[in-house]
Image 1: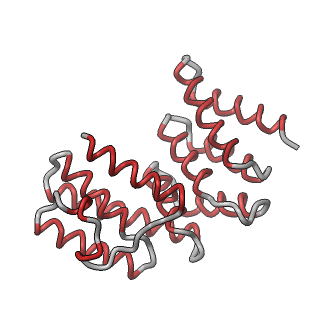
Image 2 (image 1 turned 60 degrees about the horizontal axis):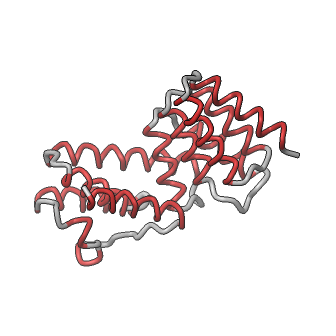
Length: 208
């Protein structure tokens, strides 16, 4: 359990600071992320990682996801399927975010794709964010978007809220506040869409 938590923490750190180690072969892969993999599964993940590098997406998240599955006791074929799906999500994120997206942005974008959205949505967030704050990362807006949808905010409402904040040039703290307030209000029984709309309106009224 502690090891799984450490893996989740490692991925969070990678997202936060924009570090995604581009693993090239077994000798360069962190032992802690591969020790629990069977030789056959390791070979499969290595092949998927090679495909990731070939299309310009980070390979390290694939190893982290595989190690997470193995530590939970999932069968090798199930782990391989989930990792393959993550690779497809990273590919879609690259398609939506463009060639200049950082590894951390691609991982955050993949979480949006996993939530059921597509490259067109990612492109809209990128355009909204960079239209006002070209020097700011897309990691937080994308992470919040995925989180809102996971909390049963409808994609249309979640997208409208995130792009509204992005177009206003909102800093990361306001996106984080949106997520935390919506989570709290949902916990109090407010419908997810209503909570999201209400908080977004408050932020927009307070801004310049």
